[in-house]
Image (cartoon, rainbow over all chains, first blue to last red):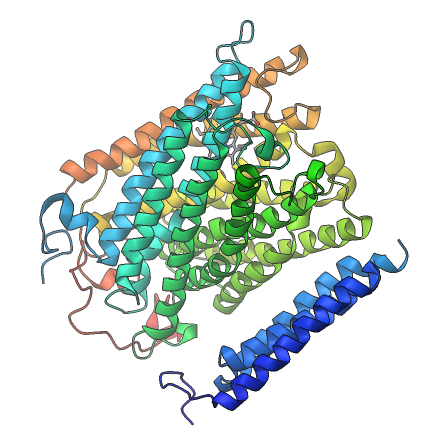
Length: 96
Length: 531
Ligand code: HEM
C-alpha cells in the first residue's frame, strides 16, 4: 500500500460508529469516576481513561492507522511520556 | 523572469496587501513588526526615564503600569512571537526547500490579516474604555478579572494574534511535508527549515490553550462566571497553569527559528559545513518537546505542591541539554573554519554570547531555593531580555543583515552596520546586566519607583537604555538608506550554499523556473571532500 498519505482512505462506517460508541462509554466512565470516587482516586481514573480516548481518536479518526509505524510509534510514545509526566506530578497524592 | 518586487498583478499598496506571494507576505510582516518594535522601544525607554526622575514621578504609577503592559504585549505578541518565522520563515522556507510557495498561500495572507486585526484591537483598547490594560503581559487573575481597565478588549486582540500564529504553524507543517523538491529528503533540509518545523508544531498544539484561557478570562469578566476568581470558588493557580502551559512553549516558538537562522549564518561565514547536522536538527525537536513540560518553573512560589516543584525544576535543567548541544555545535562549526567577521556574522556571534548569558541565568532561576529569592525581581526582567532580545532580537538583526541583499536586491553599508553594533552591545549589557544585579539586590519588577539603595544601578541601566536605543536607530536607518539608495546586490554576496543563494536577488516571482533536483546534503562548501 502507498503510505505517503496522498490518497484518501475509506474507514468503514461500522468501525467509526463502534469507536464512537466506545468513546461515549469511556466519557460516561470518566463522569462516573469524577462524581463517585474520592478525588485522589479519580485522578488516576482520568489519567488512564483520557489517554485511551485520545489514542482511539488519533488511531481511527485521525487516520494514524494508515501511517508508517515510525510515525505511529512516535505519537504514542509522546502520548505515553506526557501521561507519565502528568502522573508523576500527581504522585504525591499518595502521601499528601 | 522578473523579480517578485516588479510583478504582482496590481500596483501600489493593493499589490502588497492582496498578494498571496509568500515573499511579499514576509515583507508585510517585516514592515509591521519593525514599526511595532520601535513603538515598544520608545515605551521601554520612557520606563527607564521614569526611574531617573523620582520625585515627583514623571508619569503617574498607573501610567507606568500601562507602560510595562503595553511594552510587554507588543514585544511578546507582536514582535518576538511572530518573530523570525513570520518574516524570514515566510520568505525563505519555500525557497530553501525548493518550492514555489507555501501550501496554503491564501491562508498565509489571512494570517497576516489576523495579525493586523489583533494589533489594531490591542491599540484601540489602549485609548478607549476606562484606561489602558495594566495587568502586565501575563494577565494574571484575579487582578485581570477585577481591574476596571480595558482588559477585555486587550485580551480579544491577543486572542486574534494567536490565530495568526496557529495559521502560520499549520501552513509551515504542511509545506514541509508536502512541497519539498525532489531529492530534498528530511536530512537534506537546511537547519532553518528544521527549526521552523519544530516551532510550527508548538504553534499548532499550544496556542489554542492560551486562546481558550484568555476567552475564559473574558467570560469571567463579562458574565461573572467563576473559573479563576477565588471569591467565586474559582482557582487562580489554574489560570497560571493554563497560561504557562502555552507561554513557556511559546518562548521556544520565539527562540527556535532564531537558532535556525544562526545555524545558517555561522557555516556561511566560517566557510565550512555545519558541525553535527543531525544533533542540531533533533535538538530542535527535543527542545520543542521538553520545553512543553517545564511551564511550572514560572510558578515555584505560587503554592503548588513540592512534588510538582521538584519535577518542574528537574525538567528545567533537562531542557538546558539540547540548548547546550546547539551552542557546542555552533562553536565546533567555527573550529578550524576560515572565519570572516562581516556584519551578519558579528551579530550572530553576539547572539551566541548573549543567549548563553540568558540561558545560564535561566538555570540559576531553575534552582528552587534561588528562585524564591529571585522571583518577581529585576533579575527575571534581566534574564528574559537576554534571551528574548539578546537571543531572538539580535538573531532577527543578524538574519536581516544576512538576507537583506537577497530580499531587496540592495546592499547596505557594512561599516555602518558594524558601527551600530557597538552602542547596541554596550548599551544592552549596561541595561540588562544592570537589571540582573539590581534584581539580585532585591529590586522588585513592575514598580514605578525604587528605594535609594537601588538608585546607582538604575542610573546605569537607564544610561544603557539610551545608548542601546541610539544604536537601534542607527542600525535601521542604515537599512532604510540601503533600501532607497543601496547598490545592486549580487545573487550570492556571502558565498552561501543553500538554495536561496542560487536564484536572483531579489528572487523571481515564483522562485524557480524549474524546480531544482537536490543531489546531496546542505552546507557542502567543498563538495569534493565533504559528501
Ligand atoms: C531598548 C529596548 C528595551 C528597553 C529599554 C526595555 C525596557 C524594559 C523595562 C524598563 C521593562 C519594565 C521593568 C519593570 O518595571 O518590571 C521591560 C519589561 C519587559 N520587556 Fe523590555 N525593553 C526593551 C526591549 C524589549 C524587547 C526587545 C523585548 C522582547 C523581545 C522586551 C520584552 C519585555 C517584556 C516581556 C517585559 C515585561 C512586561 C511585564 O512585566 O508585563 N523588551 N522592558
